[in-house]
Image 1 (tube, rainbow, N blue to C red):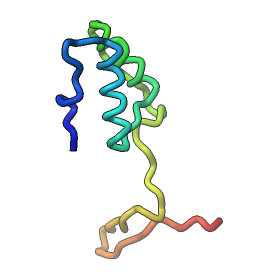
Image 2: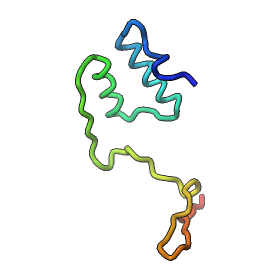
Image 3: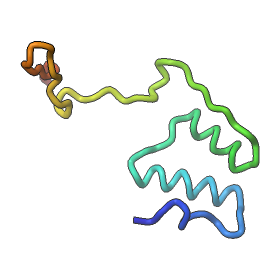
Length: 86
């Protein structure tokens, strides 16, 4: 697996650095959210960035009932989220 450091452009060039990082993230199954994409543009341009996103912007994907592990309960039994029938 190629490391992110291996993809870093030498000498540094902002567009190449953006493309390398965004492609690396996408290749690992982690496409950038819009706020992350905008922050990355600023970072490779040399700006300092503090990224703060509010609740409900899609930072954490909801687990699929088909892929969610059973949830432990206080009484020792486990529950599985209800299945959705198509």
